[in-house]
Image (cartoon, rainbow, N blue to C red; front, side, top):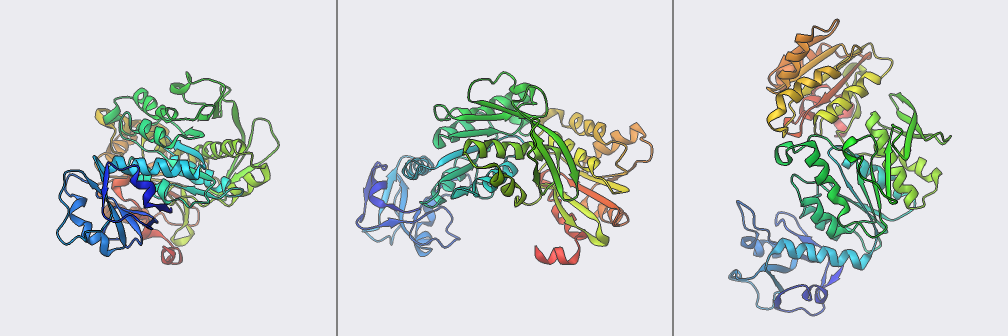
Length: 460
């Protein structure tokens, strides 16, 4: 980002200090990080007020600041220090990002969904970057503060901008969509995350479809064609992706091995491959292919982009464990939908005589959380030999499995990750595949690291 402060002055209520020959090269909201030639953005939180740290921001390289009207400037601030006054600092951040977005004018691709939005974002970036200068959301910068910061972090030469959009309640994605005005938008799926806030899957579907609120005229909306809650979404510019006959972009010829998954679209002869596991990830890849076609990227480049995919860690990440065990790290987060998908992936694996599912608590499921945990037991099929549950909520899965008395299935219930170490240790071998799945709050990767081959652990 490079903006003349004179451009920002037009967005402020009023200003003070010097504004001549000043180029802003970034935005900083964290005074713990060095940011040269940045605009300081003080954010008011429940337990802190960024206005208290302006002098620290200056020491870290900030050369101007946004400032909420009515607040006193700190003692010791140079009289000519540039100050841009506004009624609300986060709203001003959003104004700046919208201004910068229009100035650079890249093609904008927005991605949301209960599960898979980060993986899909990574896949779209891998495809797009074969042809265009591409920038994407970094980490989890996908809310009303993170998304504007993502926009402002893109270089002036960016041709395609991929924005992940997250939410926990109604109207949040609508705000982000209207800010970004995407050319293409993707809804990966409708799961159960945030049921506490949104009340039902129907509510979640409604909130996710807010991504179309800011979609440019004639823009492309890509959705899950297998989701009944999205079946009412129709139109010239709606593309449905899935395995069923209701999809306009249909997936077929699936082949899974430890190198990943291959598939074709419709009855076509073009084979695509992704270096990761999961039937649901095939659909995520198809979203990326659809965006690639929208961008007029040649098919051979799309194939190459998907094969060279580097996805964010802990999403069905295959890792080599001790005794040559295959560890499947899917510990980034969990909902019933994603846990069922992960179990299906484990079941589909060939060449393993022992398959183990290590399943932990799932959070934010509302009053039906026990029922949703217990229903997971229905999806542990006969190919899975061992289930090890962790946590108080995970215990519901174990209890339901024990009630079912499934033949040749050993179920071990652990309250803590530490308790799970020994039973997992006893199962390690070259013929074993172990899936790890739980909500983010379980921090299950700390357990996984115990079983990583030393060479893999040293790379982390």
